[in-house]
Length: 101
Length: 154
Image 1 (tube, rainbow over the protein chains, first blue to last red):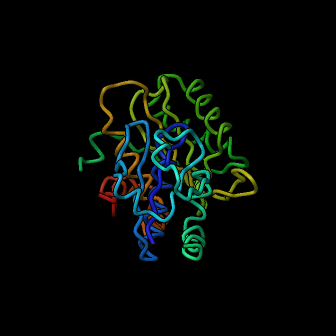
Image 2 (cartoon, rainbow over the protein chains, first blue to last red):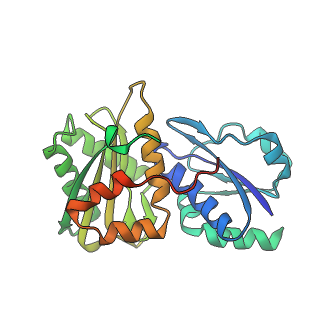
C-alpha cells in the first residue's frame, strides 16, 4: 500500500512536522510507503511528485488550515483529519487504511 | 544539518509546581523572560494563549507544545518545562512536560524554523522522549543540541 499526504497547521512551526513524522514513522513500522509534504511557515518541504500521487492508494490531508494545491488529489480517496488526530492516531489510521486498500 | 546551538537557545524550567496549564506555561515564559529572550513578556504570553485558544497544543505522551511566532520574541528559544505533577491540557488530557517554542517574526533567516521543525519531528519518537524525561536539567540542553532528525523522507 502507498500513502501520500500533506500537513499544515496555524503557526506552521510544530504540528505540521509532528503529524508528518507520525505518519512516516507509522508507515515505516508497517512497511507502507508514505510520502508527506509539509506546508509550514518556512515553506513547502518534500513536495509530492505527480508520480507519488498517482501511485498512492490514499491521500491524508490535515484540516487545521487550508492545504494549498488540493486539486492535485482530484479523483483520489482522501482522508481528512486534524494534525492532533494524526499525531495521536497515526498507527490506527494506517491499520484502518490497510484493511480498506 | 546546521548545529542547533547556532540558531536556537534552550531555557529550562524543571520542577514546576503548577495547578493549571496556564500557570505552567506562565512559569516557562517567566524563565524565558528572565533569560532575556523576550521583548515583552505580557504580550508574548498573550500571543501564546491566543494560539492555544485557537487549537490546544497537547500532542500526546504527556507533552504540551505551546508555541508562537511572535513580534515579542527576541531570540528563537525552546523553553523546556517539567512539572512535578500533570495538569489538564485540553479535553481531559494531562501533560507533565512542556516544550514551548518561541520564534520571532520576520527575518530572512528561516534556518531556526527548520531546526524547530526537526525537533518537533524528534518528539514523535519514544526513544527521544524517554531520554528527555530521564535527563537532568543541566544535561537536557546538550541532549537537544546533539539531536538531529532520525529520518526525513528525502
